[in-house]
Length: 276
Image 1 (tube, rainbow, N blue to C red):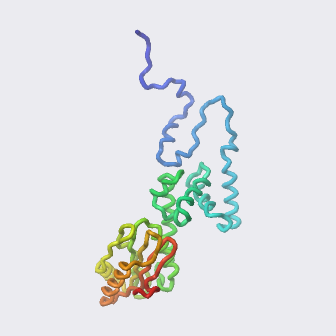
Image 2: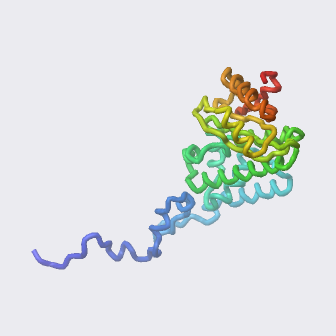
Image 3: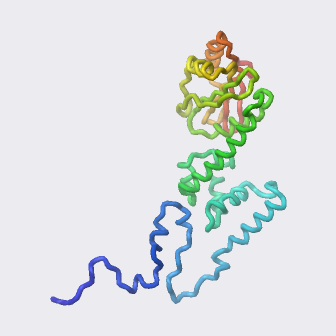
């Protein structure tokens, strides 16, 4: 049989007519913002959806902004605060369901911002770009809190120290051992993470703690670590390790002011419990 035949895989002109150049590329982007873009309407005989119905959430956004502008954050629920933020990160979608899903998944605003990017992306509507944006906002908050204790007498700013440590560590999925190095005026010299561990243990080497303090010319330190379980109650290992560090540091003129254990809902001071 003879006759003309089109090239294999070539779409008929009728299928490509009127289609904007690069339209397919726009929706193949891994960034979920592209996923939320509205696809260009194809020519159809069906009745078009009125623009007012497609953008029903626009009026809601303006009302939230007005309430926030006029009355501050106290006029808004937690999910509404999160909505206001997500407006900027996901500009072309109703973000109320996403905000509520985040709070349903993690429980509190603090837990949302403390969650890892991988966990955030398990929530429908949150892709890699938005997850990283949320973590950036969390980092800004931590830096702000840290600035409150830098170059100040730490022992006179104890509530600021606790707030900073809680923001930095409370929602970490693994144990983290942190040391605040102070000078002779008890002002912060350095804040360093000395080790990461498992969900219930972090290896700590007292000689390394003291060696680093000497390198920084630090005369006092505050030990801090978190309990991913959420319960800040010290274990016997926590108490014994603290005593070993105190005994190792004392002959070298280094004071251990406290050992703070951070949990999701609070903290414990070993000095406050008279355990050191």
